[in-house]
Image (cartoon, rainbow, N blue to C red):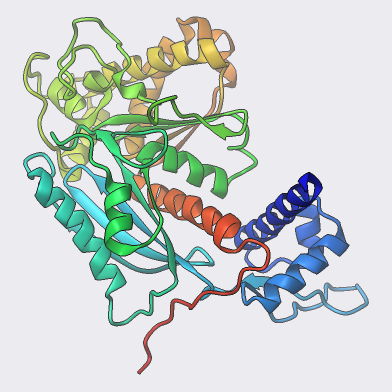
Length: 414
């Protein structure tokens, strides 16, 4: 019996590897899939035949033969975008979005809304999240019967089983079991994910050579967050999503953070903190609820023009981030870092103080090898991470060996 179970698990894993290789490459040949996965040609041939028969894969048009090479052109394999779909929801400060993603990983439809998350009552916040999902599922221009998974990403702490939002700086509401609510309402499997963790998932998907075994995604926005991958695995805590880098203490008893504590890294590096220091407000003043992107862009312009309070605010942000990263590197050794979010566009103002601070820590002994990438828009990464997380579930669970194709997501042409 145990041999049979191991064989089924191996088949499921191999099928998922082939599907993932096709999704990443677009229309690879069987030979290219073999090179990517390490599976034998006979195994790939057998798996692809099954997947084509089940309507999960399709053979694409033959590519042109390579110049000066003889023989038949290799036939590519492509995912059937109608085989299944997932729905992603992103809830952040004063913002809610939802998107339908087809099985090939393309956005089919999306919706974005502005909300006052800081003052919205609990029931209203839940209703808004349920309503945006319902509108996507009820879209008359789409046949979404094939939605097999919902992934909701939130700025804040989620529980380790990925079922609930425990706490978030974007709302005074706590302990909202979004996954249970979504499943009860729509009958579709759901998870609740930390937004920064989903950024890390997306980065690994986009650039697996750079973001493979050990790397860090830092959110530089109104809040400061972190997605951490160690030894190829996304780090989560024993009880929660973990990775609350922004609320590590930079200066005990220091500037007031929007979490209510003092001296957090975020209280110096979050958009509201940079704005507070640039406008020379007291560190005891309440954090501004929201700073517009236009105001932050104007702040960056002034900081680049002359050495004044605006530039000093970015220096303080870099110092806080640098000491935090240096302490982290003392534990895990330096790793590639992606700076994501609105303030990543001002990384040139942040980096000098950041590197100087890292060099003063135990983790800074190899500071010269630390490299940074920047991505100023976090939403596409968060959404892509949710989609890949959800699609991986579909690959391994819905399309296990012997499963049949589900109804597809199609544009209504009637």
